[in-house]
Each structure stands twice: as C-alpha cells, then as structure tokens.
Image (cartoon, rainbow, N blue to C red; front, side, top):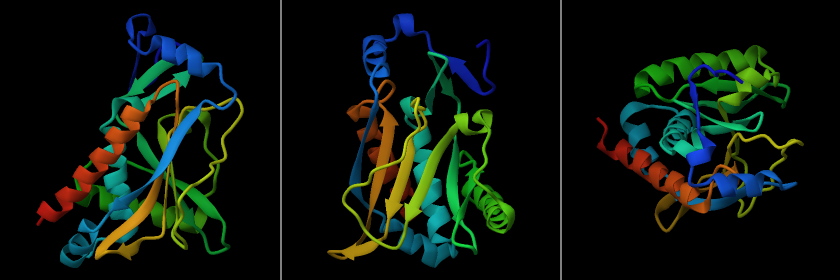
Length: 217
C-alpha cells in the first residue's frame, strides 16, 4: 500500500517491537485487554458548571486519552503498520427501535467545537444511522460502546476473523463508591501493536484528561 491519508508507515525493520509484532501477528486470538475502575468524579462538577452531557464529556476524555498513546493510533494494513495522526471515536448510538447505529466523531478539537459537532452527529445517527462502515472509514476509528444499565468486572468482546487492529473501548454503569463516582472501563487491543505498558499509559492519560475538567471554567 503506497499511502493512507492522515497516516504514516512505520518502518518495522528498525522498530524495537518488530519481534513482538511478528510473534503476536501469528496468533489466532492476538488481543490483550483489561477492565479497570475509573474515577470519573470530575465530570460531576464539570456538568454542574457547564451543563455538558455526561456521555459526550466522557467520550471526549476517552478519545483524547487514546489519541495520546501512539500505539493506540497504529493499525495493521496488509502486514504493514501505519500510525494515524489522530483517530476518530466511533461510538454506538441507541435508536428508538432498541438497536444502535455507529457515530464517528473527532475529539482532537476544543471541547465546545467538539460538543456542537458530536451532538449533531449523535442526533443524525439516532434518527437515521446504521452500522454500515466501509473498511476505509473504520480503519482510523476507536470502536467505543457503553453498557450504562449495569456495572461489571470483566467483558468479552466480539472480534472478527481475520483479526482487525482497532482498539475497542467500553464502559459500564457509573456508581458512587466511597464518595467517588466510578465506572468499569475496558480496553481491548491487538497485542502485535500494544503491550500492557501502553494500556497503562491510556488509563493514566484518561485520569489526566478527567482532572483537567476540574481546572476548566
């Protein structure tokens, strides 16, 4: 493949993870992931000050945290690794018939700009969206969904065969624990691209993004 818009090809010949890439690329189930309890308490005060919607605020923080980790922006295409400058957050939108549609949005924007665009796209997806995505459209996306009706401690994700390399991010019901608002948040990644260190960096970045909400006016 000669080029992918908005992405650069990684030279695996001089990449320190080239052996890891080759090893995990041969596996029938090459994914690695975990679920962690995330303290999202800063969203409470932010909503009180701004009136911003809970879900789209959390989505913004999650998307920006994921984009801050280069390995989560990498995709495998025809045996090559490409790294995007920024990835879209494609989230599920509930429809009136109890199905859902996919809705990709940008989070690499100022919050007010993001929120205006995200609200419009969310409404359009709810009214007439579907789950059809071309491979080109899906390639740069994080696949994001939520289970707001219940908490959980582990999550099993459906994955395609052959394997794709899009990170999958899911969260459950937010509940008060010891005076803090927390929810389970899962991240599933292709192990040929992502190690436990990179997963930890995502959760650390998410904590920082949430903390910035306390500093916003």
